[in-house]
Length: 233
Figure 1 (tube, rainbow, N blue to C red):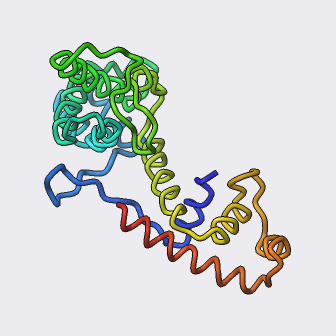
Figure 2 (cartoon, rainbow, N blue to C red; figure 1 turned 30 degrees about the vertical axis):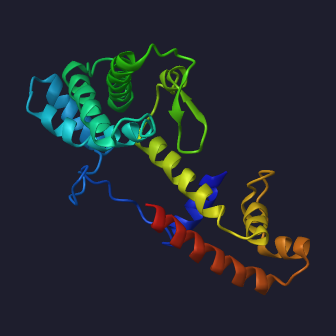
Figure 3 (tube, one colour; figure 1 turned 90 degrees about the vertical axis):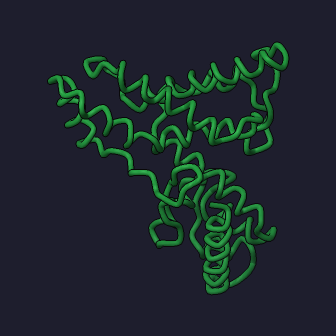
């Protein structure tokens, strides 16, 4: 449901795509490949062009960063997690079989996660034996992060899904800064509670205020959300 709010904000230029940077650098990572670009590179790979592997690795580095961030509260530096995850990505590209009916991002995500998990297990064993049901730490929403939870991640993970997950997390945190009435307006307008989106007039009638006032409040709310989201990025 938060995706509705994000789409609305994006359609009006109130949120922008976030640049992803190399760890410890101001240089932005290259954007992910489009479907057409990836298909063309994979076709060249099938034809024996090994040189495309470097491009496939470079253009999938964002996936490593997104997955590494899922483990950033496990007590391991995110820089180390990205380095370990990159090893998984390299292995994925080197062993990927384009003839199989599986997306490269799906295959690579599992290789990246497995590489990070193996590293976490090795480091955990140096401290103490870690059970799959023993909390590693807490995730970005304060929930306990278990090894069994991480290994159960949906296998069809993609860039877009990961980006949307981060966006929803940022939006929830930004909305937590709103007043009670501002939150209520957002819930009613975008159906965040009951799934039913309402017009400004319907919201105005429910709250007993004028539609023009709702319109003014919305503009203020969206500006505040934009400010909070940009601050957290």
